[in-house]
Image (cartoon, rainbow, N blue to C red; front, side, top):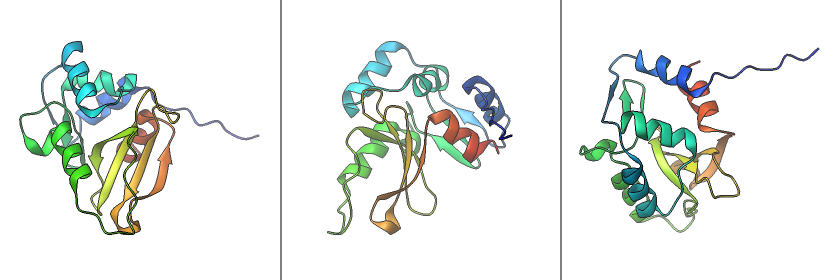
Length: 153
């Protein structure tokens, strides 16, 4: 008999991340601020990301971060996406998907992108590596699955 994997819910994942060494976060954001960021990025945040945004603004710890509302350019969601989209890319590189936004970096060079709630791939996370010309190398079905797999296992 095949065992079914039981996934953690987002609250449990966030509590686990809060315990990580070096954990820091910004400030809770309201619906108006969320709408501003969505408008600037031309996306609709999935509910899981909205929860993080509303609760923390942004999150960072020794092993990773989730970009969001921050005056620190390093954690600022708008600045990170602006940089990712304005890079001069070699001819063989793919254009990053326009129905997703960068929410974390891949330390080996590349980005984790979360697909907009109104995308055909709503809520999925993709890893786009620079070394492969921004081809998508890995996919997670949700932000929760990504966080559990990458930061909680």
